[in-house]
Image: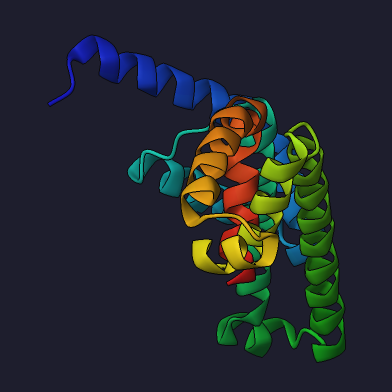
Length: 185
């Protein structure tokens, strides 16, 4: 069980996060749903999810990325709901346009993440970088060893070195990278 001090600190941080982003997120949601009350509900649902699941963030960038992506997805879900289709008769064409925009934004995030990862890999020694690139392409340690004509133990040792070097470089981008790998599966 959490101590009272810890609980109050978390509640205080949560309130600061909510106060800082609530208005802009409502306006953002409203661009999709064109209904201010529904926009407020969508934003509140996202914040409730953050609170209930005790979601933690590493940086301000990851907080914003999570919030805006969640709001966009909730807004699209709202537009797809039968209730809204019956009331507003929202054009299927418009919904498809929004979904394409979401796909485009996802591609931008994936591209940016790939660039961040590639830049980090480029800081590694050549052999380490080759091994990590093959590993990202789902090569097994045995396949990597065969491809590069080295032993499996060398592959494992080089991966260990690579992970140690990449971890501090990529630590601020973990949430974004996790989101990318989660959304591509």
